[in-house]
Length: 383
Ligand SMILES: *[C@@H]1O[C@H](CO)[C@@H](O)[C@H](O)[C@H]1NC(C)=O
Ligand SMILES: *[C@@H]1O[C@H](CO)[C@@H](O)[C@H](O)[C@H]1NC(C)=O
Image (cartoon, protein in one colour):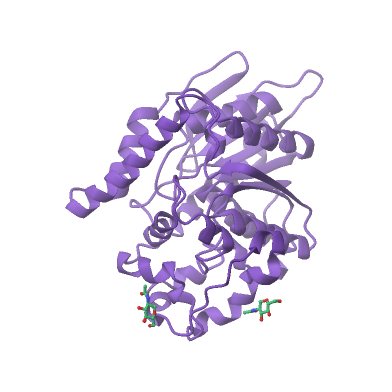
């Protein structure tokens, strides 16, 4: 991690303390730990609707799903704007389109691209579980794509993208796959931009999971717990999943999928380094039996069929070196490329998970600003 701003590091570590404290809350049985953590995040950072000379911000709902809409101003000489659907991260359980971090990111995109950004306030764990989050974002996005709605917001139907970070990148990738398989859906999505996305739950021992298993912000066990929570699963499985006991060789259900995330063939030697695959001979077959959703491509877009991948639009994937999820992104980029999709991989050697939202005081990391600029520049050139 390479903090650029003075108070940034302190702020991040305070935030991490909340993560561990919320575990304590859970242990003590005071409340669902995610509700407690989310309460802390939102209490300190929620922002009301606002407007500036360049961006108009409105809270409304699209077919019953809450959204925050950021309307950039029309570019001189143009009659329509570009559109972007944005899905915030937070382990399917935390944060909000209305917290300062996401509000600022979406406002910057709307202003710099003269675009309309729809940031979806989908429902979170523990209110709803997989696949309800996907249903929420699909419903809101389909509503937005209607001709009369696009017309109202002056959005060009040929220039609409979907994007999200972390668990939001997971949902954006799932939505992308759902939409390309929906023949009735018009207009088509022009591109997808995935920021350090979560893409699979079958291998928690990719080189990046091994390398960053104790990296702050997102240690491996926290990511595995987010997965278990997303499926309303049993925490007793977490330790077994960390050693890949849920996808051991004797678990037949996982056998066919293993090749799709075989990082010894998908990733170059500069990434795999000295790391060895963790494929136990025997494990715990009960895990997949109790949580079959682990093998569902809607939760793990990386394992989708090649026939689905080849339908996907132009794709941007941002990855960070200091992130357990780095290889999820790298493997998806590789599978998409092999399927003939035009992919831009944007890797940050000094990046860490979540860095793009830490761009303003007191969490103003230089890599946060560089990742954000790079993401916006790619959108500007491709949307
Ligand atoms: C993984 O599975 C093996 C074989 O069933 C078992 O011996 C081992 O204790 C398990 N590890 C964990 C962490 O659950
Ligand atoms: C993974 O790829 C390596 C190298 O190509 C190969 O030797 C191995 O059999 C593959 N494993 C699976 C499960 O596909």
